[in-house]
Length: 426
Image 1 (cartoon, rainbow, N blue to C red):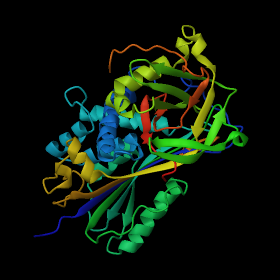
Image 2: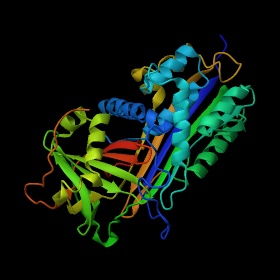
Image 3: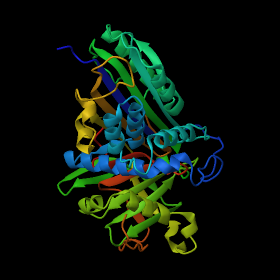
Image 4: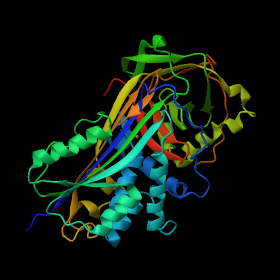
């Protein structure tokens, strides 16, 4: 039996809080470049958020007690782009697995939404740098359809590169060099060995580099305890702020505190700190509607009603690095994308060759959080009451496992999503 040509997907997410250049102008949230109601990117935002939490719950269930960190946007964009070359049944599986309802949103609207989303995210924004892109490394034996190359370039900005997979080491060097360049060296090597039957390697990356609007003072960072669980305590460099006001809430009905930290340029982080021992209860209600509710409440237009809770806060947050690596060909079939990784795959829109299938799909994400910022090469009707911690009304200390989401305010997109169980784990 003739061996099927292989298609390899490499999806990379880099998020970094870092020492960005100083003195650059930053557009305010909602300023130039902010999305208008009805923009194509906003139409796909609910589905992208739904996929983010579907994937989170899957990975968290399979990796209890471990850090989780990934870029849902990188995964969604790469697979939506791949759907451009898929036949009807395979295409429907891909898009529905990404949480799109094809009765409500047509495939052309999905691609137009990603086109607008990527163009918006890639706009220059002063000291906030967000870049999302794709590259196609094509075997000389593959005859790609011009329509596929044109559409992937037009909607997703994908760049094609010839690669000689008959020389696997040279092909790996080419791909790794490109990845290293696009991720500013944050991810040095993603390809170890490639088979001579590889037909195409698709690489998608997202790189985020932002500075906190209110940086932490480096001289205030000290080693402190972080309680991984009731039996495990590790030492972490704990950052500290006491002079800046922050938006935060404690949800009476969901046992957690939620903090919003803004980046210069319009992006923001939401950090969710479950009450001691309550991570499972918080994860149980973690869904797009809950994230939207927290985000909506933690906005300036609510300040006049909850003035006392935009206040100076003794804030403790670990300085740490985290990463995630996931074999999507093993995970996505559990979300309904099944045929793509088997001989039932119909990828006839990519090339004239038959038997093309995805043999391997890898997603990697890296996160660095420090005093200056971040660098990375990731509904219920419950009522909310804002109130202070009982024992000390001005202390919020992330000294136990917490959840983290990095959001693009303009596009209402989740760039990265994760759970930090142990900040000392790389």
